[in-house]
Length: 313
Image 1 (cartoon, rainbow, N blue to C red):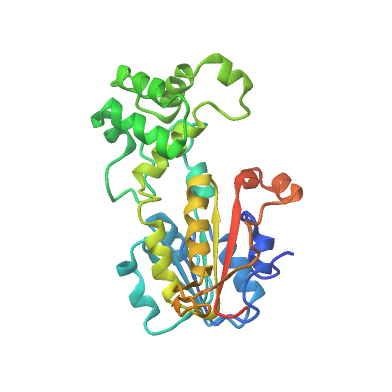
Image 2: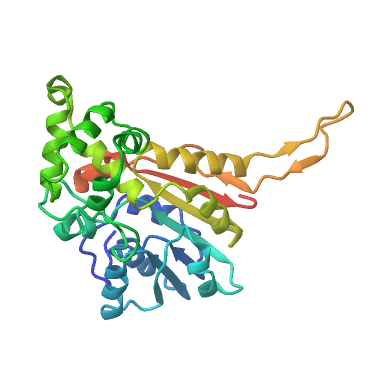
């Protein structure tokens, strides 16, 4: 499928599956992670009946780009979808037909060395999705204790050698300023036997963990999903794309909890409904990229799409 009117420079991860699992008719949709606009352009093209496409992104450069390159029916705002106070006034009393969340970093962020997200490109150690908020990665690494760094690498990066990496970072404080310099320190701390057998760069997990921590990506994810679900109309859908097990686990548990109906115990029947089901996961398990999609977009290899339909299916 190609967009005939809107230019697509980069087809987003799982775009075919996203289009397939959208409601047949959409009036109002929210995209909590607008990014480079790949999903927005495709969805607007496929659904001319959309009245308003609410696009959020915490990165101010994203909103600045869309202010200069406007899309019809798109209302873009700088906001963190995990903070309802930053965007709920946009929706007013309207109920959403659909909400899409494409978690993680965008291609624009990864390809811009000045943002400090990629260890493959020389750049400053910033890594903030909103550069005007919080502290940079370099500042945190200069101040954090070895135990704190170890905890972040292990919990958010699932790095087996988190303690060795943290020790190396603390030992080399003042000797690194850039992404590539930090990546080398991390790589040198990983045992050769592990690097020899690994298919990924030795700094991959550490950079993931540091990015998640600096941007507080997981701390409010579950609560934000609850807030969004309350604004979706019956029959509407929530689509969430995640890229690692920590994100996917939160999304899966939340959706399975919505799906469950709980009844009180009774000796003479099924009992009264204590908690009603909000809907169903469709399909039951996560949707994974096909071989074709992985060939087209290699970062999609780890992507997972989960879809929840509110109300009767």
